[in-house]
Image (cartoon, rainbow, N blue to C red; front, side, top):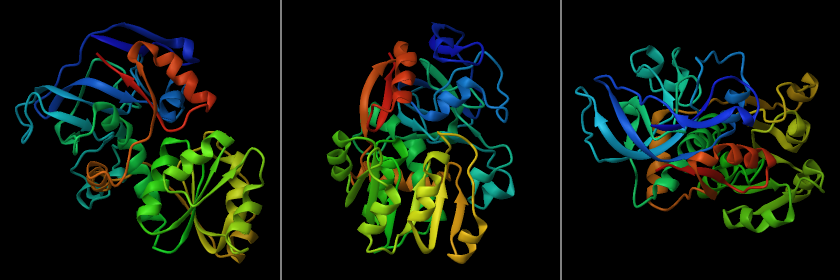
Length: 343
């Protein structure tokens, strides 16, 4: 089969479109013929090399997959060859106490497709049968690949960790990102007032079309000052953050007393400073978020299938242009998800 592979960690020049051996499946697995695979920043970090992720090389990235079942293991129930599916990117054991209590993203053996194991930058990918989920509604393969990772992440941040309630005010950083574009929609659908940030004027209307009530252009405005002005000096109840130290202080200052900040990423670096006096005197809550649970993904998928939430796709490129797609993602000249079309 054809796949995009890197044989050593480094820059985008390490990505090669080449012929590789197709995966074989076990009795509890399925083989998916990939039709679309969406990009995530995790693809970049894994390609560059992360000390915490010890992966065998060569490696195939790609966390978000949609396609057609090519082969079904003998112990897999309720699925058959030809089914249109998307893949839940979180891989867990389904036997430990965390999994059995519904907190599968805390599983000791938790892995992400395309990170610690080979993923969807390929014509075929093998995954556990429990991770193959029927595509909801009339979504295209590209749409079905664009929502899983960012939707489960945003749902877990907004509702499980931040506990967003109707009438609250929420600041979503980076409307043009995958997490940002779906988090705006989820927060608005829940009855919150949503403020978001963009880097340029051309993204303002796009952010508003997703449901944002106010948009701050961070390249020319002081985010915290603008947020305070938009909230009558009070600040927001919740901040959804995935950028890191370049916006950290602005996010904290934007919070109201008793506010909650949830972070799931660090695209601008891994270290941020914190004045503990500010934290405790304003009674703030800071939480880290990593992916989400299968049940959260399924609930998000139902709303997407019903058309209440919409995957946001910037553009679709062929698999062999994965290198160009990663470079485009790094340029930040996009709004929404980049998707690779396969086959």
